[in-house]
Image (cartoon, helix red, strand yellow):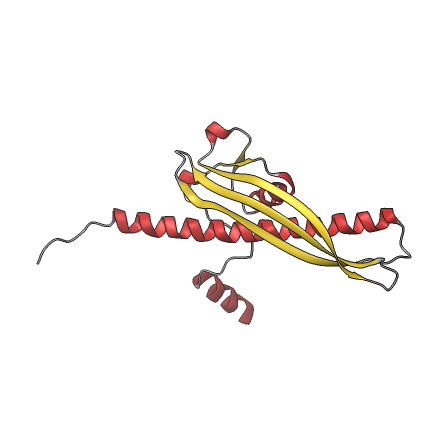
Length: 173
């Protein structure tokens, strides 16, 4: 008895599962340009939310462009012998989003994520490389989530702006 009531309350308050995106009809399908790791993660999340994604730019109602993606590492701790004990791994992605006519939905911006990677001298180099690749993939997934949050905010702002502009103005005194 309690479960149906809780479900009704959640549906009534506008609660959506994390990752769900409601696109206005004019912004679908979405074209992802130069996606790389982050683009793949964004596409997966969009498709999982039921958003149409296209491989043809001319069909798109919105284009999400990945301008740059880079990764680097730097030593943050060494032992007495000078061997690296820990690295800071950095993942940076630049992106923007435009509608079908090229009007910016999200201005060009960059995200930078960083994780610490402890180096174990007893592990083979191949194992260390695999572990760092997993960490970079995790950062790409986090970047995709952050980009979708920004995209959601831009869509809400656009919807509100269009709602204000489509509402008739009462000019009576």
